[in-house]
Image (cartoon, rainbow, N blue to C red; front, side, top):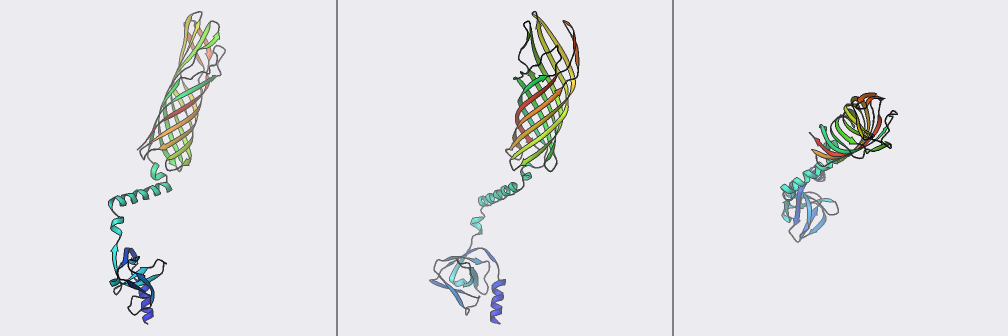
Amino acid sequence: MRWIIGLFLFFCSTSFGAQLGKIIVDSANVLEFPKAESKTVSTLKKNSVLQVSNLPTEGFYKVRLPSGDLGWVSGNDMFVSRVEEPALTPDKKGEQETSSKKEEARENPDEFWGDRTRIQIGFGLKYTVYGGLSDYFVGLDDMNFGQSFSVEIQRRWFYLLYWALRVELNQAQSGDQQISAATVQRINEFSLPIQFGILFHPIHTRKLRIGLGAYAGASVVNYTQVEQEVSSVSNSVKYSSIDPVGSGVIQVTYGLSKAIGIFGEFDYRYHVTGEQSATTVLGSVPGFQIDYSSYFMKAGLELRF
């Protein structure tokens, strides 16, 4: 019966807590059960340190030996102290909470990115290749000084898909192109495209996001001036139109914090103007249209709310 009671006390005693015991006698017996007459299973030397249970049972503490075995030591043979306070000082506690949050964010990227509205403000350069001009105009492929400013709003639609609304302000000027011995042509472009797009993020980690997007919309204001010099006479054709425009986008975003990030982007865009006609100082100009492809390199800031 005594053996059954001892076994019951052994397994049902208070669990181990944040306490350590230090042997203060020359030799302390480790008993099988919390009884003075119980069998000795090991002996501990003075100054031995081991883990002990939270509360004593009949004056004995349950201990865990270095070998991993369990036993009981009299409270008179050792000094028991708690180790919670040094481990949970404000600084340590803060470090522990920060570490825990970081681990959680690694497992769940949206803990960092969230599902907030994102506003991107970007600046970049554009390069344009013209084509599809009438005989009256010559195709140009020099737009090395183009600039683009953009503001874009993004919001998660579902899972890794995001919708986006982008408004841009583009300005570009071609180099002078020699049409003939007496004629030089240059195109100045000013446009304001508005596009709606869908972005998919196949790579979506805690701080890095890579998105592939498709945009479509219209260039609601497209003002282009074609200047010529014929026999030293300046001639210009001005027109404006509302034209369809489509874009393909690769975007890379790096989060600096939960509220701000930086992004880089590469765009390919195809743009077709409606057929144009105009009257210049030299007389009537035949109808024409301009098709062109544009390439954008852009970088900027992303703000999240």
